[in-house]
Amino acid sequence: MTPEEIRKRLVALQEDDLPVHGGRTLAYVYDAGLAEVDALAREAVAAFAGSNGLDPTAFPSLLAMENDLVAFARDLVEGPASMVGTLTSGGTESCLLAVLGARDAHPEIASPSIVVPDTVHAAFHKAGHYFGLRVVVVPTGPDHRADAAAMAAALDDTTVLVVASAPSYADGVVDPVPQIAAAAAARGVRCHVDACIGGWVLPYAARLGRPVTPWTFAVEGVTSISTDLHKYAYAPKGASLLLHRTPALRRPQYFAHAGWPGYTMLNATLQSTRSGGPTAGAWATVQAIGDAGYLRLAEQALAATDTIAAGISTLGGLALVAAPESTLVAAVADGPLDVFTVCDEMAVRGWFVQPQLSYRDRPPSLHVAISAATEPAAFLAALEESVAAALGAGPVPVDPGVAELLRALDPVTLGDAELDLLLAAGGLAGDGGEIGLPERMASVNALLDVAPPALREAVLVAFLDRLARPVAAGT
Ligand SMILES: Cc1ncc(COP(=O)(O)O)c(C=O)c1O
Image (tube, rainbow, N blue to C red; front, side, top):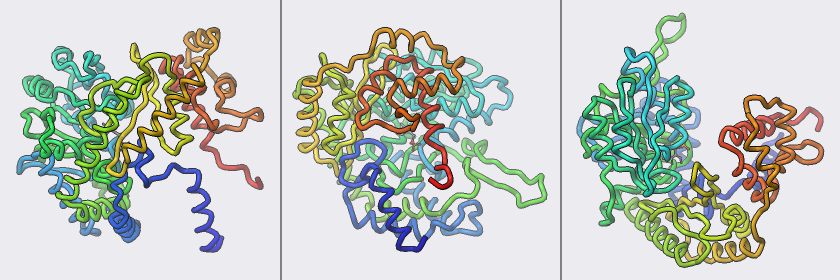
């Protein structure tokens, strides 16, 4: 392809993507609404895209930028002088490394475990799965915050890490970090605060005089914190920080291997070769916005959140899951309203609102992560119309026989043929077996919602597996 053809094709490919600007995509992306900063960050990504963070002596620029980012974050998380950090590719990698480091700090524990609230991000379940740790899940209380006493009671001799969220992704509330960290410290167990989504907002919320549950290194017993640059630091994708109270706490996270004929591999993260692009993009963004800029952006996003939360409460049809403590809002139906249809209707109006499936005794909800660029009045106008449309459309029926079948199916026993049938029945495959998402997702979500989590996982893995196939040659 010629450069011109490639450019045209890239633009055409991107047409089907959610917009990353405009403040209307309320999950996955975060928009400061600062076009100049964005342009500068993209320049920085491009300039360093080929640099390799594998060897900081070969690319000292990347090390310098990483150290600058950690220094900036230290003020936000009230880090002591001893605090150190590592730049990772994202929130999940920061969480994975926090768990890996905690496990490897205790080689004497044969069957290590972590203790988490049930609202903890799925990244910690992924860590348990990848690294062979048991994940002890403690139910949250009626306020959707971790139950500190129950978590303390769940600690035992196998516990290597306790996790709290600031805030939790699904509900947007901060766990009682002081109590959880104190219980962990009393047993000599590490305590990680997952502030991937709140780490660049809560410090400014506190400075703006809003009540914020203590969650930083100022809380005794907190040993590590994850905070994402590619969320509310508004950096391009691929950047998060894992911060440790001391270098000794970070040390087990490192991997070195000299026992082969090649270079001594020396890594602080799961990646070895890593692009300098995200490092430079995050550095440029943080320098351009700066502390005063982040204060303004947090004020904007928090004010928009207040307006949206108040609007949802008075709109009718929806109820807040909890009063938001940062910039996340979750709402459930307050009566006979299908929240999945509301999401579809919002999409028709140009807004991406994330559906969250039911969990244990919790009904399904809709979820928004509000950016500085989000216009609350426009959002609420679209939501009011969407709720009215969803009420008009009525419930999305799921055949009781199908629901019973889904509840009874054991996903472990399902082969490819059965999964293909389920994908077709769920509307995720066309008549010819072609895989894709329908225009409207409410009926798919309604079916997934009645399925137990293990079946949802099996069906969605099968879906992704079939999506991720190269187009056959000649077509
Ligand atoms: C609290 C929390 N932890 C971890 C993650 C995972 O981050 P990422 O998607 O960057 O891997 C998220 C993402 O939303 C999050 O909100």
